Length: 238
Image (cartoon, rainbow, N blue to C red; front, side, top):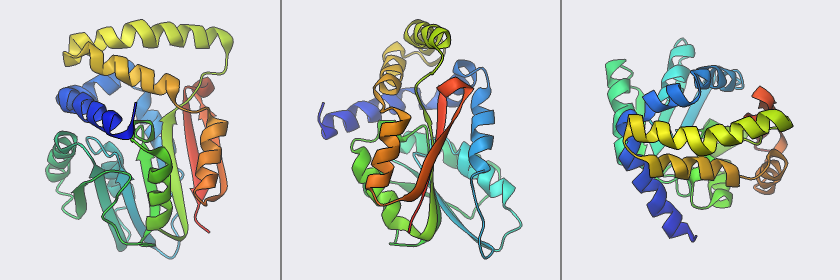
């Protein structure tokens, strides 16, 4: 599949399921996605009372809203939500407006081409989105470009289960249960078949760690959660 084909496929998937996206996340993960996102927030490091963060593939805005809530007392802040799918972005925008977080910017753009200044942000965050971009290397290069020196890259993504028995159970659940849930709740079985397939095809944490390093990040690493179902990858701009 070429980059354009993948882009069109991903846009179609999220245009189909955006209205049920939050509900499906809760059902599919048994609510665990909230705990995973809390762990992601622990990776944010504040220096000199400045926080300027972009949440790429922001979806319905859970991460950027949680960051805005947690760091509400800081003065030097900038919050940006970016998503390539306008329907997903608008869903997030509704929640942002409901919270009256008018200082959160919303931008409809691709991860591979961010309309953000060079070396302008302290944090780049992408949650359950890097596997869906058309060109992962280009997206990582963009992450490096927009970060300030000593800025931090943080990625929360599905990974590869380690324990053999759990791996077998997870494979059956992913292949058979998730698409059926997608059909029942979101009305689109094929969309969730794609999402399951995108997880299976995503690089191992070791290989993805090397891709991050290849874009220039230093002191990069990862930690696994729930026996490898999830990984948090981090890296720093030199």
